[in-house]
Amino acid sequence: MSVYLPHQRGSLHSLPDDPAAYDTVLAAVTEEALARLTPEGNLEHPAAVEDIGDTSLGITALLALAERRTGNPALPEAVRRSTAFHLRERVFRTDNPGYPNLRVRDSGLPYARYVLAPGAHPIGDWPSTVWALLQAVNVLDTAEDLLADDQYDSLLATAHGYWRWLTEATFFNPQEAANQAIGCVVGGLMLAAHLPVGDAKSVRTEALRLYETEIRAHRVRDRGALLPPEHGGAYDNNYGPISLSFLAQAHRAGGEQVFADDGDELARYLDARLAGSGFDIGGPRYSEQHSAFESVLGLRYFGARIGADLGRYRGDTRWSRHAVQADGGLDGHFAFMLVWQIQDTTSWHRTPSTSPVRHQLRSGQVTVSFDTHLTPALIEAADTVAIPAAVNRQHGFGPVTDGHLLSRPMGEIRVRDARADGLTAKLITKPVVTRDHTLRHVRSLYVTDGAHLWTVTVVERLPGSPYFLAGLPYVTADGDRLRRIETPAEGWAHSPSDLRLTHPDAASPYHFTSASPLTQEQAAFALAADPRGYGNPDEGWSHLTTTTALEAQPLADSPADLHVFAVRYGAPAQPFTPVITRTETGLRVRSAEFTALIGPLEGDEQGNPTLTLTR
Image (cartoon, rainbow, N blue to C red; front, side, top):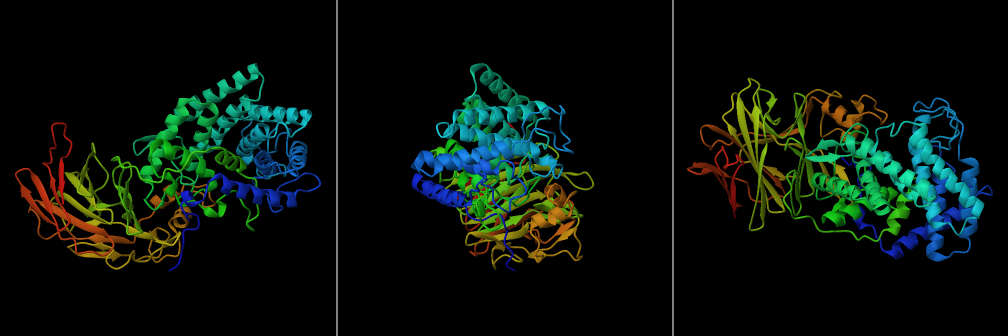
């Protein structure tokens, strides 16, 4: 089966980003734009229909930047003509029929339309106006001496009007999309630099107030981090890195420490959830869709700040430099992000952070990314990724007994990290209850040498015929693409007990098999409240009853009062055959690769687990 994830392609830090590379990009933009420029001054792609209100002006900003860098004599006139086109043809002052978010009717303030036809799709006008504001302030920044005084003044007045429409005439952030909201704040901060002192102070003060009260105050906690909410959820694969880029520009333009601090927190969260290969999954708007050049600024800027290789993020490199239409032609949508990343001189930080992270274990080619409940959200080894499997509508990794997955905690989760002689390990102790409300303590040990991952899970003796849910093998790296897999490579997973790959029996939208041609996102949208792209795919995926799953039986030779499960993930190696024995100081896990001593269940003086690791 050769089904590829359509949007997660090459890692963004693989794209050249030196000044010469960007000059090449601008030269290509200039050539295409000058050939496209109409007598009226329009720079829009002929096929553009949606996201159109700002796109011509976005290309204008790129041409103004190109003129700054090259002095091309053909560009000043193109900048003036296209600016005039935007002011004449793309600024609307009468209310769009059907727009639901107005606070003031017939304000006469300017705004940009998502779709030009009146009433065709008014819901998108708020973000389109944010984008138009950002394109306008970029032109004001770079083209002041290219525009006639009256044209500059008209564009500045329009940009100020956009700001007022966004913050006075409509409700703020009506789509609950942090990337749009932070972008609006960025627009205000950049606009203020062009206004008279009194107006500048008012706009800057309002921008900072909106950030504090309408964005920061509504952050959502996930995996220990406070995150700007995106379309009703904590983080979205496509929009989260775009928010990070807006935070980078907010810090560059506004200088306030709060933008750096919040960007650092979002960046550390993203670093912890990303596989080493750059794969990620899950989001309230898009499960597997990744942005591209729009993410570069934030990933590069904050990757350098926190000392992590965030550039491994797999972007949709069809938009590697700028937005394009279906034929590959230039589109001005998001052009402001390309302007900013060219202006920013931060270099990529290319080496992984080595500090222990609560919600991740990473070394070499192995990554375990953990969710809020410290259950793996993904396991990657030997270029293959497993995601949580499902049984009886329960999703995760862990022991299963009586149809009940023991992964949801009923108390405090404790973590201990350890390193020794090239090995990295994490021990997680999680209190859970069985279906009959009996308390159990699931202790999960993860050990890696950077090429293989060895896992050992220990729990007090369980009733019935328990087994271990060890994941749904999902994708493997195939060049610079991620390919869906039916079965992992032979030997990729191993257990000294029986390890089998099971599949749901029924063909139903509520069952997902690895042989299905659907991707996870497609299957999730089919079960979402609105499958057209506005529903929550995470919620849709949670409706799945059963998935393909690796299932491991308990070890036969283990202490009589315990069930022990052991699985190795990674390229074929010698079989993983750990021996578990009880000692006076805890449980000893001895294998050919390592020895680990897991301390007593009650932990140390603070109740935290203890772990000693040796080769």
